[in-house]
Amino acid sequence: MEVGFVFNVNKRSGGCTTVQKSWEDRFQDLLAFKEEYGHTLVHSSYGPLAGWVRNQRDGYRKMKAGKQSAMTAEKALRLTEVGFHFDATRVRARTNRHEYGC
Image (tube, rainbow, N blue to C red; front, side):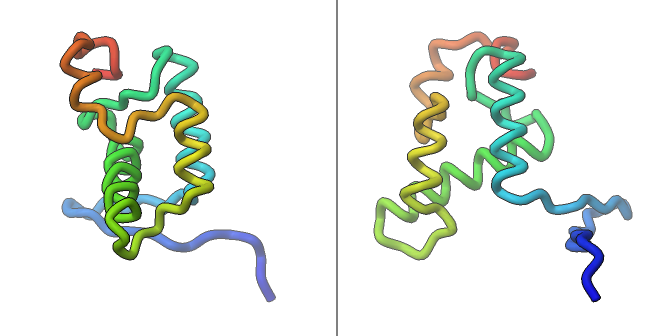
């Protein structure tokens, strides 16, 4: 019998555990971030969302290179539609640190 809970946890150093969120849940977190800050340039110190953003960029690069990746064309399109930058290096160079969630 299934009860509808996700018991998929990751143990981190220090004994903390975190529940793995689905791609859709993290995407919704990104939308909330955009609502608060006005953009999708999540700083690397912004917690779990920052790691998810990094994984999306890495996955996109792998997908474009023809390598195996969890990134799909549909996910890439959804991210692009909300203003996500797969190569944020140039954009961040023109943006003050405090403007992207530090």
